[in-house]
Image (cartoon, rainbow over all chains, first blue to last red; front, side, top):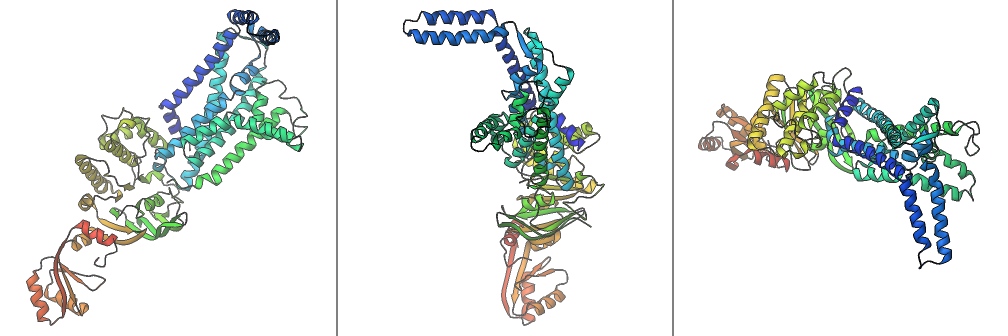
Amino acid sequence: MFNLLKSDLYRMVHTRLFWGFAIAVVAVLLAVAGVMAWVSSEGFIHLMEDSMAKVANDPTLSVEEVQEAQADMQEGIAELGSLAARQLESLTSMWGNVFLGGGLLGLIGSMFIGIYLVRDFRSGFVKGLPMNRRGRRNYYLEKMLLVVLVQGFCLLLCAGCSTAFMAMFGFSYLEANSAGDILLVLALTWLLYSAYGLLTACVAWLVRNEGGVVAWAVVVSSGMAGAFITQLMLLLAKALPFLEKMTAWTLSFQVGSLAHGAQGLLAPSDALPFAAVTPAGQAALVGLLFAAVAVAFAMAVLRKRDVK
Amino acid sequence: MYAIEARGLAKAYGGRRVVNGFSMQVHKGDIYGFVGKNGAGKSTVMKMVTCLVAPTEGEVLVFGRPAWQGAPGVAESRVGALIESPGILGELSAYDNMMVKALALGIPDAKERSQEILRWVGLSAAGKKRAKGFSQGMKQRLGIGLALLGSPDLLLLDEPFNGLDPEGTRDLRQLIMRLNESFGVTVVVSSHVLEQLDRMVTRYGVIADGRMVREMTAEEVRQACGDSLAVRTTQPDVTLAQLEQRFPDCRFLMEPDGTIRISGPFEATAVAQALRAMDATVLELTETRRDIEEFFVELMEGGKRHV
């Protein structure tokens, strides 16, 4: 199995796909930090104030419309006040805002994994590997280990780059996270995104089609489908109250809870199904559950599929 | 012990059996020509041998062990295969393709082995170029190289001459023969290029509609082809015995419909005179020349005149 892992690591660093994704992630994170720096600059605030003045002097607008527009803009300027000082809440909440809440990490990790795994089948490369019982077991277990490692790499890349870029643009933090908080957030994020990655691997082995896995990554791994399902469950919870606590069993809900950073992860919460389990515990439970389901499905069903 | 022994193999896709009741025996050291029309089930059989596809029924033994189970302690790289597509990663160079597979198979001297195989298949010069831009022939050669990487004892090649120019075809044929003669590699080659098979194969298997029609040695095929005399009489068994006595240097084969096929150093007039002397009632006496292609087409179509 470790031979296959060595082979995959060699292959990854020699493919443009890997470096393309890595460069894209770095570019997006740099752009995010750059945009945040720009909107927190004095120039941007002046721009907003100029816009307010233009709105006030616009003869085509009624008094009510002018008042409404100016109120919106003043609210925006007030929100930018904390940014103007280039101070963010905490390191972990910055990670949550930059690459967790928006689905960036879920999207890139899953998309890379999906495309990479499908290529084995699309190219016919897998036909040259041992595919008897032992060969298949090794192949699928190794790929799942690779998925976990890739998600870990993506997480470290995102965390490292976003931290460095924010520091580069002069951002600091109001609250200092302890090393334990940082490790807890990183570990839970790794676990949840490993679960997403393993589900993506299952989809890749099921459909064996790049279009299919890209669609999955965009719709599901980014958290889009999960957010929709959570909203739907909350809506239905008015008629079926048990659904409200069921939302805590979805991956997207747990990623959403991590998007707030380390704050409150170890404090008991009434919103969770079990009173004794903290949000961190619930996130770990959900991550492990989904990962276990994916591994079991891959080993019990997908491993036995014919390679045509 | 056989290199491959298939017993009662069947494979169904959506209720349709593409291979049914298929049996095959490939001896160790054979160059086995696997012949059949498109869609006859050749690739499916090869996929079952390499465990890419699980049989619906039956069993495949590779070197005496169930293929699916594998042999404990024996390297799985004993079987090299090129089935349908060359199986190359287009975004990588030829050398990197070799390295990726060599590492996956756990070959200790991966770098040296990769370079050696690239030399064997004539791709040393193109080793650093991305495989995506290769011609079909180069891709095919790289695919063959990948199949050879694990120093296999059994090599399965599905249409390996596809896309190769005459020089490449000759080189591949010579490579297969060298692997067989020098290293004792058992090779199963499926191909429509019967002329190439005829030059190297030691045994043939003919598949039609998912069933093995016939397995025979290359010598038997040669006997069945070439100039021959077909004799049909009312008492074929008696006629055969008498002709064998009169023409001891000739080869005689009785076809399922009772036709006696005579090959070797015969003279048609002498045979005709002998038949007259034997008072045999002759229904047919035809001198024919069959080439290998015609012979296999007859077999694949279930022709009655097969030997």
